[in-house]
Length: 279
Image (cartoon, rainbow, N blue to C red; front, side, top):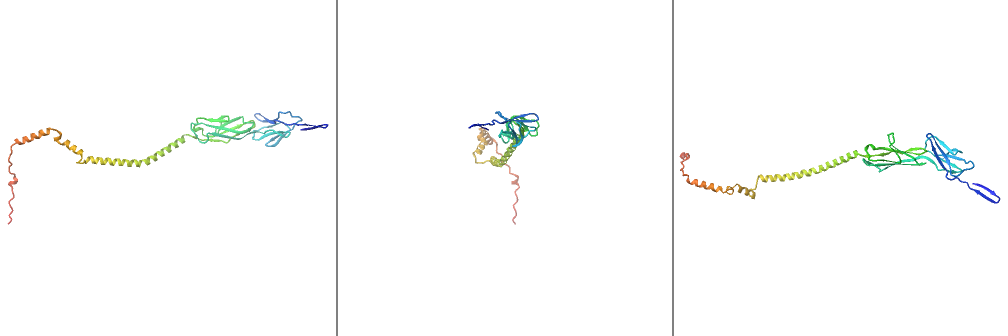
């Protein structure tokens, strides 16, 4: 602000810095920061550079450093500070769905990071594997298999620096879970079988006892039963065939024609015991 007087007139000129910002230029070996504004600065303004809120350079509108760093930088002109520029920080990975992943399904990993300028490159890695798995803020694994299990992390990079996230473990539920399920099923089946077997044996014994009783009754039939009377009727020759009467008549007629022969006295009658002498 500049104050001037002209007689009794006070003239006030207000000068301000607007849209002060830091532009970043990188090469393969260095990074250069340039403090700029949309307004025209006059009178050789003084530039001040801050690194993590500490002055590192004055007068020059540019500042160069040679290593990637997580530090933050900003410039100031006439007491006006630019927004800070910094490399990625708070880099993290989220997994969807979370928890154990079933074999054959899909999983998506998303990388997030806070940086200014914004992150312009994301790279995905699997722990203990040298080559990157994918690029981009999100990484999807479809039709997942057991070999996909492991720890994954992302690298977030902007023109200031790069930063790796903490690794996230991906757990794949494959054949091991199937074997466990089968083992549980077999165990339950055996328990049910053990509980059912005594009941089955008792039922078998009770059914077998009834069969034995039925067999005993068939071997020793009741003579007074109707079935036994039917059997006797079936074996009775008179009821079986009329020829029985014919044979009976022939027998009777033949007995009439045969002459009667007087029986001779037996030897027993001739050999009678003499009487005992009682004297």
